Length: 145
Image (cartoon, rainbow, N blue to C red; front, side, top):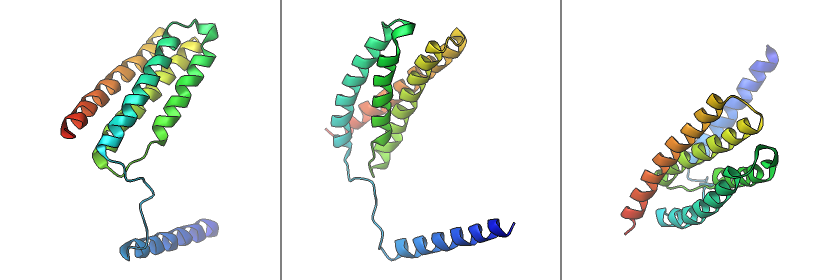
């Protein structure tokens, strides 16, 4: 119990120092200053590479999916690593991350010979979130004109 109390006090002290420093303007955002146009450029390239990798995975037999799924996982990690201090961009981008997670999980479920229902749930989630992302992406491209 004492250990938990010491941890709680240390955590509160850390948060207090962080709050004071941020109030003084001494901290800086660790997220890059990327515009919506920067995101559109990145997303165009990403979507092209994702579509190519997805097309390969979709025609690959279950036993040979390890390579194509690994490629999708690498792209998913790239998407997850994308950062911007633009709130609208990151709101839209969160749908892309969720979509790529669902697609990868769907393929992994298929490889593990889980039920068709499980695989279909992941792929339906992928389609839903990809559609949400696409609508947001289109809105971003229209606001940048």
